[in-house]
Length: 258
Length: 268
Image (tube, helix red, strand yellow):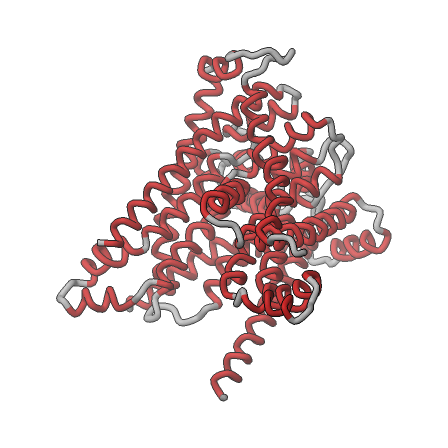
């Protein structure tokens, strides 16, 4: 007798339930518990009434949005150039953009901070944004490059033949077709930056604290319940961002049918 | 003209991107405690690194060993678990398939800190003492989804009848799996393994939350603790330079081989 092969997914399903679903449920449970295990809203309430936590949260969102915007502005032209046959013929330059990711991110960040010191730049929000753009630019370039590279060139050629100027071709054909790459690039940069810790401390010499750092500090000082509440709030932000992305892609698919 | 500006822009970004790495490389050849302070050319740090490696007693070397061992174990188990899972998921249909694929996506979407904190709470909840095992389990959790994603396309390319044919011709399910299925899935398994291995090597946040208080360090947590104490161990500079040089050489070899293969294919 042979086993049905679909049953081979069962061990992994059990694994996922224990190591992915249960831990996320535990975040929610701990978030609504007081120290003795009783149900409470106090942890969540504490976040919304603590002006320090709220301002850190706002700053984290701001930094993440700004960093994502910087990466997009710097990364899109780079991806466009790398994917264009007229402007770039070597595959090596593409690899060169991915290569630094193989070096430990903390080490790279520390070296960046040290470089700022050498050039006499004071560590602060400016260096934070600049340093994070270093770390995450490849994550923006790569997905955009991929979609641009796979794109059917005959669309833009057709637009050209029909009399569109290069600017029009870009605005009406290339840019809309590259949007899936842009959204996944935004996700890949926004998600890690909104939740970052350690990197922000190194780049600002502990002057700027981000949301991830408060989560870490609470967990490490055994304030699990408040830490879990903060993690839950971050999880909600992540969930909302993912939802936006899904809607966007659903919209794309419908648009493609017409 | 347009091409000139485009190339200039690309090189401008690359110079920015590589500046910190070049900086580490340059200052690996001087003895000073901090980067940015040149105290004359010296290969002493490389010497220290290698003698530390020989004796195997320095905390830095222990961290390097832990990093590699954890990545190897986690990637191997993830590849096994992920491949079996992919075969199972591929043969599921409808809502069950969508459901498990959704669960499979969660660790990839979740930021590291959420994965780390949630697993930390899990191990507290289960009463596991945290250390080597919990770090490996945590790494398997975020590595396996990538293996599943890499093996699934290979299953789609495979002719499903070959496995049945092997069974009809008298092979046991084990033999059919080993001799028919695995060879066809191998490229996906290998790329999944490599991806899992690098994800594990790079990880900081998840290890940080699941390593407990037994003093277990990987390279990332070592660097973190070191930097917080003020001042990085100088030997990290030659170590990072060597890692980067190795990767660079590997990539060059792979590229030359691919170019040669492409040439061969073109000549045929």
